[in-house]
Amino acid sequence: MVHRHHRETYYVVNEGRILEFEKGDAVARVPSATEQQMAFRFSRFGEKGVQLDETLRGKLAEAMTTGTGGGDPDSGEPGTAIPAGFTYLGQFVDHDLTLDRTQVGLGEPVPVEDLVQGRSPALDLDSLYGLGPKHAGSARFYEPDGRLKMGTTLGVGFPPDFPPANIDQEGFDLPRAGEAAGGTQADKRAPLIPDARNDENLAVGQLHLAFIRFHNRVVDQLAERGVPEHRLFEAARDIVVKHYQWMLRTDFLPRIVDPDIVERVFTRGRRHFEVPGYGRPGDLPTMPIEFSIAAYRLGHSMVRGAYQWNTVFRAGGPGPIASLDLLFRFSGTAGNLNPDGELDDPNSGVGLRLPSNWIADFRRLFDFGEAGRDDLVVPEAEFNVAKRLDTLLVDPLATLPLGTFGGRGLPEPPPIQRNLAFRNLTRAAMVELATGPQLAAQMGFKPLTEDQILRGNGGAVLEGLSDTERAQLVEHTPLWFYVLREAEVNEAHPGSLTGVGGTLVAEVFHRAMEGSRRSIVKHPGWHPSLPAHQKGKFTMTDLLLFAFENDAQLLNPLG
Image 1 (cartoon, rainbow, N blue to C red):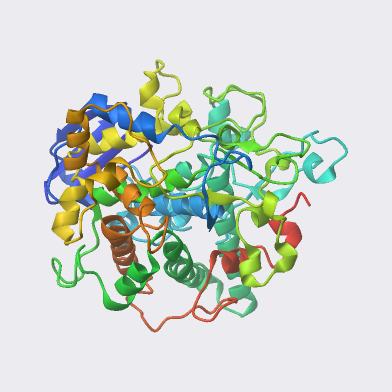
Image 2 (spheres, rainbow, N blue to C red):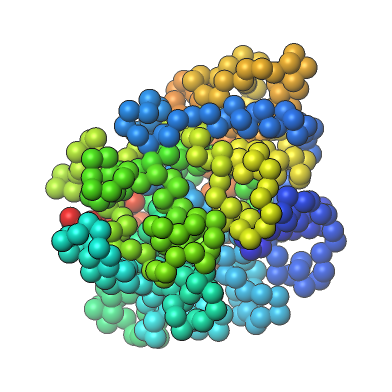
């Protein structure tokens, strides 16, 4: 899959064709030899399915996006025990899996060893690293010593007489092209990172910056130990990627997938997707479109409409609570980094860097009490939890900013095309994706009942459907809706993926780790070497504590 959300290109290996979507249109064509060599390798896990018509998809999407703001403490939206930071960690991981993250154009030289590996669906953080500091197309992301570049925020006057917000803060914004880039304001705001989607909203942007800090801290530690300069980058990347994979396996996945499924897959192996013996020895993974277009879009359900972001932008603070609209606004890809700019105009506003008053307070996004750091725990009312994983999305996602799908500068689309649920359902229909009941039968799972599909358990309320539409929805349930309904009605682990969705997500993660050149799956004896608060685990809070030097002021520079 290449480039931005508004243009997605899937090279499906077992069909030998490219499925390309641009501005809502679908095209299937035969790829050129060069495209076959350089494209990501997608596959179908199931057979093609019967799709709902556009009218029914529209009704289903509207039912899924009737939630409230989902962030206001009084909103009534059901929450989970999952800290809200994991919502955006999931988005960061998605960008590590399902795009041409290295942004290398056709014809640009790529080292042979990276030609496929750098473009395969592997959990190897090439969304962070690109093709490394020695590659001409990626060198701009790096300092001369192999550390990744960081940016500096812009001091602003709000709140007045509040120095942390009023001064520039080095190392708390993504690196940006700046005035030297010339061109438009949008060109100057462009992030110097391999995947511009990681500047699509402020939460994922600040997480990307945390991973930059993580890499740089590992480089510093290795340098202190005397690792030769010519080996520093590769040695650091090996440590970073494997700790990242271990964090996903021991912390992230068990929070969103039934932990029993995760344990089974990682101790006994895959049963369904590219099982041992698949293809030829050494074959790299493919990415099933059922995962990328449906099952792993689970995070859309976890998004809240607003967040207690930091000491400035929170309920009762000097600024407003950080709405989802504001998190889009203070990004360089979907917004313009300016409080008074027009959101759908990428060149609006004067500032070219993140304002200092919008630096993240990570204590509000991740629970450091889990790591025994009670000194980094905020009051419960100011801590953000993810919305429950179910079939209901918060209503701001019914009207996406145009910049999230490449619509800025184009004619205003019909309102339903700005609805995230409708876009997900329609994209699946465009590729004739397998349905939930199909995959349940294929994988040998007991299918959801008619009542579970139509009524669920506190999720989308499907009213106003005709008898014919209800029958169609039950027989041909879209896979994305189906896996969210599975989580919603999961009695053993409420709000966790299970059955079709849980198994597909866990097995694709396992295969993507196996397919990485740096792999905890291929090296089962590997264990974390960096500090961890619990034996056998390496959690996101462990990662952040190391990246930010165990310093409360770095985790929360606004105080």
